[in-house]
Length: 338
Image (tube, rainbow, N blue to C red):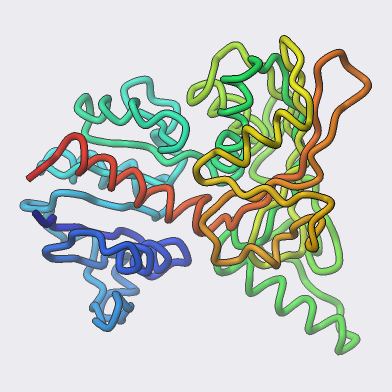
């Protein structure tokens, strides 16, 4: 059995990563289409040893397409995703547009694969925010063991989460500083090179950023609406990989040792023990890796039942492209079955 697949946003960082992962994982593709805006039309992207010519999304006919893996901007998804679904495709969308729609499942396959069944309502499945994905992969087995009451998370997010232009800005600013020039912020409000910016996305009425709001509401939708979330999101001058320092308060006792044993048995998680040769893991070390990495796991003595840990993942892979492909794999295994 094979499927006709369209990758939307194929010229971007996540779109290229999706194409690479589809090939790596031998996804059962019959025919694949690379789609993007008109300005990218005619350019080529790689799918294994094939070169695919990018087609114009605005002119593309989705008739006969089974699965769409989508990573354009939210406004683009709002326009084309319903059109693709109406033509009979199932759209797995990486943008923020559909995530909080009650008729659209928000899915991390290691956490809530059963939610995929809800795709039939609108023909759309939403991929969560990158920072949310890695956190809930780590939280799910701990929540099952001791029920989480509250999470305080501080993120250290790479510039690739803001796209290619953001990566270029970090590179160009760093170079200009070494050349004794004054860097000019464009993508970011303030200098990102050799700096940290405590703003990701826009500020909201309650003074949180939208990224912080996303981590709150998405975790509740995916994992448990009763969990209280306090998120603090910071952009740092790293190219790829998001890191999070996570503090968790439980309803009952769960020691660091027990938590470590649970996480070591969890699919999609790698635990790095302080006593190991690596001691802990950093974003540079996990680029290109599929798993969520946990290190510095320890008890929190300031609350009755608390833990702290460091959580790192490749935001372009598990935080976006891989998660979408994993959703597609469950979809064809359990629901489409051509």
